[in-house]
Amino acid sequence: MKLEDLVLRDQSRANTDQIISIVMARPELFDELWGLLLLNQDPLSRRAAWAADYCAEINPGFLDGRIEDLSKKVVNFISDGLKRHALRMLSRSPLPDENLGILADACFNWLQSPTESVAVKMYSMVILHRISQNIPDISRELYDIIEIQMEEATPGFRNIGKKIMKKLLKAIQQ
Image (tube, helix red, strand yellow):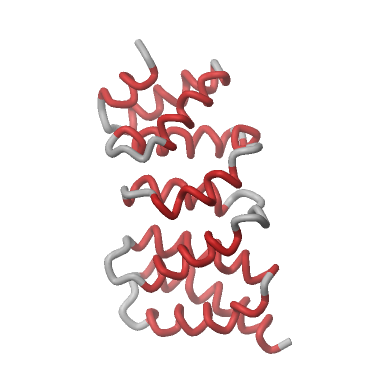
């Protein structure tokens, strides 16, 4: 069975775990899984991203040489799940200098969007905080955007938001 057929077979944790097991046993298949993710075709890419994200969590080396391209392409991803898993991978990886502006703009837009999912907003917040450590000029804007959303935010957003705001406040006051 081809990896694409397996990815499309079923959207379930059991199927995703099976894909992860196969890729971990045969690491050369990660290239194929990554290619499916980058197609930006729903549901194929979204399901491939789920498996690729967890494979890369187990073996971060899978993302070597891929983060720069992912940071550039994530801005065009159509599926919430695809964005969520791409941002999750980016949140754990060294961020590329080359596409930092593109990534920061996208994350600011998603963080402020009334239609984005909470998970996309939360990973955007985490990535923007990491970017602010290299570009301190965005710290105040990020702090203000998070603060504005806190009152109507979900508990998870508030939890991450409070932690990031506390760190940002220290950076702003220095």
